[in-house]
Amino acid sequence: MPEGNEIHRWAERHFAAFGGKVVRADGPQGRFTDVDAIDGRKLLRVMAVGKHLGYVFGKDRILHIHLGLQGDFTEGSGPLPEVRGALRLRMWNEAAVKKPAAPGESKRHAWYADDDGSNDFDAKKVAWVELRGPMDCSVYTDAKWDKLRERLGPDPLGVDGTGGDDPAKAFAKILKSRKSIGELLMDQSVIAGIGNIYRAELLFRARLSPFLPGKDVAEATLQAIWKEALPLMRAGMVDRRIVTTRPEDRPSSKGKKKAARPDKEEAHYVYRRNGKPCFVCGTTVLKREMAARNLFWCPTCQAEEGKKG
Image (cartoon, rainbow, N blue to C red):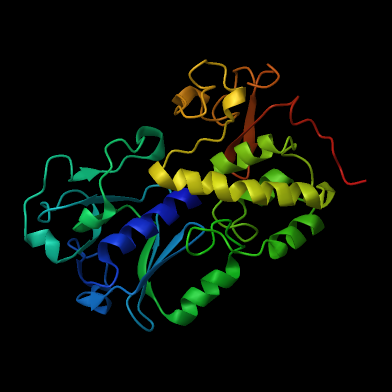
């Protein structure tokens, strides 16, 4: 499932492409039934909160999209392509019918693991967007959007991708909870936008055991995690690639160069590195299920220590 960095990235790109413009929309296969509420209206704003997108077309006309596990966007320039596959929604602007697509400008964005941003093109050149496989694609009233916001915890990136949410609500929940911090970080009602990758990597960088109950985590540690989440997630918005390792901890000589992009194998400390040695201490990274997702951690660097005294 895309994490908050990718959702905020889409919000920025789609507003750059369609913001302030009249947007045409359709649901070619009939599964998006609210098309009349947004087709031919001006896009006023695109909001991102956690893993939810909200496209504002006017009062009580907020297109809500939650990609879920299977959802993804395709985007491009030039004319609308032929309808293919399980296409839920299309949106396009006037540029979609004025010029042919230039080489490399009509392409499908891959998942973060396969997209290093090298084939990206300027969001302002985007003329059309296609949506497939979302968990939800429907029009919300303002009140329904507000209820969604109330259910979600603060987002490290804020609504505009630059931060600003107050973490006090999240800290209060965590410090009262007997659930493990590993579970709590995945709970979108506690903190919105952190997913499985950022959970594993933020806990490692904090040298915090994922099994420690929230009530036993020092508030200073929570503040440090929150402070690190914003720049790490903001960096992940640039090209959808999540990099959490520090140059000095990467084993290769290339990786240690601050200006170099680390290889995929050195991008994460523990995520999907089970069975491999920890970059910091050499202990074998472990894996087990937590909160219905695989958890990765180093039992030495993240020993259950550092409880509140």
